[in-house]
Image 1 (cartoon, helix red, strand yellow):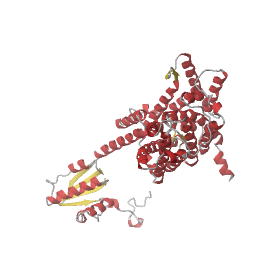
Image 2 (cartoon, helix red, strand yellow):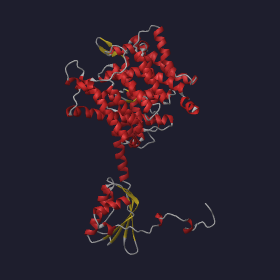
Image 3 (cartoon, one colour):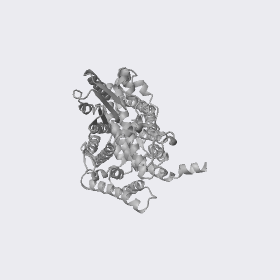
Image 4 (cartoon, one colour):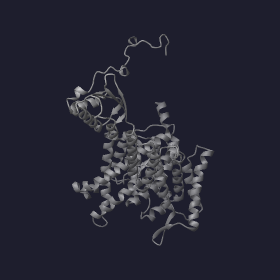
Length: 540
């Protein structure tokens, strides 16, 4: 028992310190995404707390941080605005439609976990992964540029003069501390120390810079202070449970569920690579779904894995579930007890931390390998990066997988071959090589000369794999053509599943397909005494 506890708490210090750093970085992100979605900042903060806590305890990837994200927030904007238009002014009906959608989104994600759909993340090619991290790094970078704007004359404009130089100086100082501290010692959390140092400089120097508090108030919020999340009974009172409501929220719930799962599972894969460990994708689907159901019921905007905060956590030494639990509980503590202190943290310090995340997230090796990988892979990498920036992650990944699959199909379609020879009795043999599927059917049909072939033909699939219904149909049609001109045809070495389907389609295939074939390549040595050693007395 002592050894078990020791192993579980071996990294406790790093987990706690890293969790505190993540909690600080979560505050402006959650607030910003709440503003993007058009809801109160506390809705984003509650989502970050509840989703972060539940996924940290029950999720499939220790050390991964989840919360309110921009990828989901941009979809929620139209949902909230359309929902508000359905009610009277000031009723905020859109907010309750959002909660209902998040609950439905959670059920969809849990179904993905129940049916073990998380394993399909393995089908995502490496160029898509690289494009994903590059695009997401660019998105994180661009999102931080908005912090360099201030309100002037009722509209946001870029900073200028001393205000800009002070902001840049504090950002660079934060980045310098995070870059240089690990070279001196790795025992201190560089991100947390950088935030503390820069905050102290701003407070003691009485510098007039943007802080977390001013950021919230500029967005229309009243401050960070709030209470515990409360159960939202008004969801059941204000949102009518009928087919009209379902037809309105279901498309949004499906899109949000897909984006959330794709971002979470790809972040899980990325953390797996960074930590050289393996997470459980199906368990993560279940945890994300249950977390979104809970956060919808208790007034949160929903969320998924956050790649930026996850990397902050991993780089800070957070490896266990404790780091995510500490981050979530610390965030709640900030809301309940330390709102005044957190509101004094300068935005510049948090921007500096996120810029270092961008540098750590971007796959710089993609520049080095540009001339070494196939042009199609390079195209997919750039395509996914661009779509992630201009649209959203789900569209980018789905497009990348589709393009990669089409390229793979095209390349394999060109690999079908037919070796031809004539036996002593005049029978013509076609030995088929390569995969036979929908993409290679046309090339397969071109190999045969039905009109000029001899009366006896054999087709040997020993080096071919019959993959789909299109391939079965091609074989069926080929047999029909030979028999239509009165020629005999035999099929050899078809796969077991292929033979079953052909037998079902027509009984005449029992005469065409050869079952008993004496082929030494398919014999298995069950008894060594039956097969003399060709090397004589020499042992391998």
